Image (tube, rainbow, N blue to C red):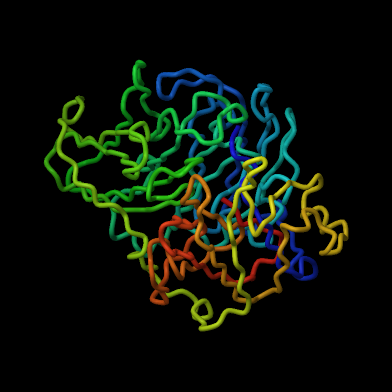
Length: 455
């Protein structure tokens, strides 16, 4: 079985009601409405040559796909996404939710899609309307099931919000869905039956990979024109960590098509300690190049170093105050009795009633379940979270904070704190046990609601 539950704590900043109880309505205050019917269904796929039944998403009238269809819009758009659960295969989870990873959900916590925190799972043959805006957020996000480990069975896809007035649009000529690269690990058995500590059977690039010994699908091909510049969007939608672009992290980069017209390999190379089946390839093909595989060439690895990253813009000054208002310590451990993970000595257990519903029904803070996993935070305070050296299995672990973006003050593999335009993220690696990482992040409690911090 998968290692479940994974470590969670719930950060609840108050007050919840009063002027902060505004609920998004169907009457849009946004520039445009993006309305989508999204069906979640069981389908048989063979993305690496091995057939299995998966959990997939598809737009109305279209076949479900792996990964799910790209959902996109523009800054300030309102998204009305009606999710219908058509799951029937009881070898996997048949309830579902959808989390919009990276969207802060200001004033719309009930749309965060976190099972048993903000909503109950959607039952089979039932629907749930996700109704939210990204406010001023733009960039590369993704969506995935947030019910148990269901997204490892396939339910994940890109979610892109573009800016019609992008201040960097002079740097590129094209930014469209053809330049999206998704990475995901893939397993040949349903997630409830997959062993806890297991390597993936293959790694997929845009839903395509290759399992040794099987007839594999053709390589994914990205087409470019010579002399043009392309904004590529790279998303790691993996369940487990195999790259130094960590699970749930995303990057944009500009590719300048200034090489001779030809075919070029795009290689996804894991950390050196990972098995070779964590490697996958795709093709970058210039218009006019023959429809053949590239010639093999020697590869020089230049791994991304997060400690060298800097934010494009200055973070808010209060993020860099010498002394935060609140300091939280996160210590990871593993329960040796059942091999589940713990935070600060507590194993997270989902409540029978979602946390948000408990609050709305008037439960006092000390009575909200799961009591030991809830951290009550005052509003509009600067919070500093330190992840102490992580010596649990499967490390390094990427932690994701819902409802907020944070400044990475101290990155993994770094000995120093960075107050010079620290990178802003929603997911960060906690590092490994052979370094005194003590990864440190900061955020402001400016979005009152119950939110989870998890990996």
